Structures are given as structure tokens and as C-alpha cells.
Length: 389
Image 1 (tube, rainbow, N blue to C red):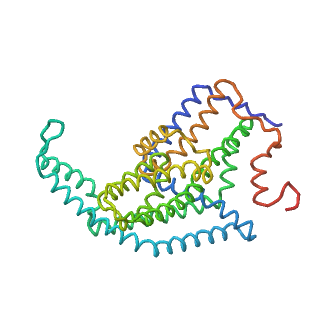
Image 2 (image 1 turned 45 degrees about the vertical axis):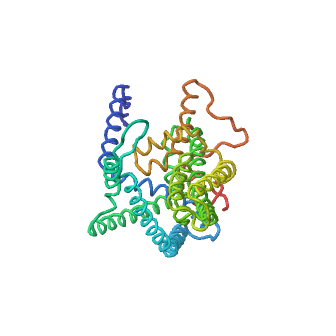
Image 3 (image 1 turned 180 degrees about the vertical axis):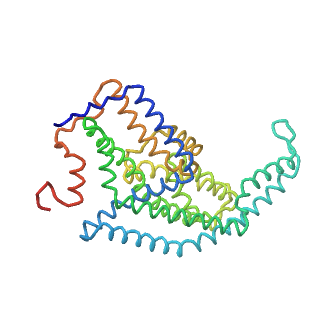
């Protein structure tokens, strides 16, 4: 005789609420406890996201295993990075040393100019007191650079450990990316699975355009600014070009930061070959950069990155400030795509709150199979169960 087990009682709303709050509290505690690993995990995720298409292309093009494609990709990346360091680092060090000498000379001139009393808007200002305050602030700013040899060794060792951690985690993320995506899809209720896939595709478009396009854009801008600096005689051309490429990761704000640095260099160092006064050379730098900014905003960015990450300048600036306060340099770099992603998610939530259709219906796409079947099809290379590859 089969004894039927009693029906499992459903959780009450209060029980569900308590369980959710406990889980969120535990998650918050884990994030706080292991907060030092959050930035490396984010960097590993970014590295895996950027390299995953290349691995997939090698795997399909050469008909090799995914593990071998990952090995080839990382080996090529390591060789390219090592070669770049061998070629670029000596030039950067030489220009950085020259920049340091110019900075010391400029500070000495500023100290002589400020070491006097002068009138400003009817107020007498003691230049010596002003210089003492500026010098103190400058020393506080540069203090982290003056560290002992032991500190350098310890920091290099810690950085090496985190680099190894980032590489290993990114390899596993690339290797198991399809299984991870399928697992997330299984957690979504079937009624909302199509919305989840649509949102995932839009977010993937944003982050793909930002990272893969941004890397290419930064390389292009580095080359353009370096050639421009050599053309007009702006000192430290390579350093200024690399700096401009890095500033491309800060839309709207990066151009202004680079221009401020370039104007200071032009004013105090002048042109390396143009026989004009320093103030006139500043105007030349301003003119060239205005032309480049228009070319960058109206031609390069729309064609290399697209318009999925384009945001109003004020929104980007506020996002950069907020990102810097929350996550430092990483928050500054990720501010623009994060805000663009929040725009997509908030648009979806707004439509759901108003009981409206959040997406434009796509009548040409057939319904997707379950995530387990799609994952199996990708891994096996078959179109359907029992079909041929």
C-alpha cells in the first residue's frame, strides 16, 4: 500500500520576506568581508568579456578545442604585452624623466615669482604664505610616490599575485561562459525568459561597444595625438599621446583634462621647434585640440563605439564623480557603460510599472528553445537533438 506524503505547505509572504532579507544581509556581509577582491573580480570579468569573441573565433576558425583556443589567445596577449613593454617603456621613462626636470624648473620659477607681496583686487597677498600652502598640498599629493624600496617590492609582489588571480579567473569564465549564461537563464521564470534574453542582448551591446570599441578608439587617439604633438612640437609627445588615449575612457570629461595638461606643458615648456612665444603656442594647441575634438565626437566615436553608450555630458560627468567616490579609478572607467545599462534597466522597470510593452515586438524571430537545449546545441555543434552538426 502506497502512502501518499502530505502536500508541502507553501511559504507565507512573511516567511518569504524574511528569507529574502536574510539572504540579502548575508550577501551584503560577504561583499563587505571580501571587498578587497571585488575590483580584481571585475577586472577578470572585463578581461574575459573582451577576449571571449576572439577565443570563439579561433575555436571555430581553426577547428580546435576551446581550451587550446584560450591558451593560444593568452599566449599571444602575453607576447604582445611583453613586446609593447620592451618598445614603449624606455621611451616613456625617458620622457617622464624630462618631464620631471621641467616640472622642477617650473616650480622653482613659480616659487621665485610668488615669493613677494602683490596686490589683487585691492587686497595685499603674501606670496610666501601662498607658496607654503601650495607646496604643502603638492607634497601631500606626491607623498605616495616617495616610498621605500621594501614598499616597492611588497607592492609589486601583491600586484603580481592579483594579476595571476585575474588571469586564472578570466580563463575559467571564458571556458565556462556558455554554461554560466545557461544557468542564469534557468533561474528566470519561463514567462520572463524572453525579457531576460532581450535585456541581456541590449546590455551586451552596450558593454561590447564600450570595451572592445573603446580599446580600439584609445589606440587610434593615442596615435593621432602623438603625431599631432610631433607635428606642432608639443613636448613629451608619446606621454601626451598615451595620456590622451587613457582619457578616452572618460567621455566628455577626458578631453578637458587632457587639454588642461597640454596647455600647462605648452605654456611652461613651449614648442620644441616652432619659433613662437609660449602664449602663442598655447593658442596653437587649443586650435589643434578643438579640431580633434570635433573629429573625435562627430566621426570617431559614432563609428568605432556607436551610439549605445552616448549620454548627455552632464550625466557622464556626474557619473564619473559618483563612480570615483564609490570605486575609485575603476568607477571612473566604468561610469559611462554602467549609466547606459541602468538606463536600459530603468526603462524596462518603468514600462512594467505602467503595464506597457517594454520592447518593440520582433515578429521575425522564432521562439527560443529552453536554455539547457541551447547550451547543449552550442557545446555539441548540432542544430537539434538527433541532428547533424
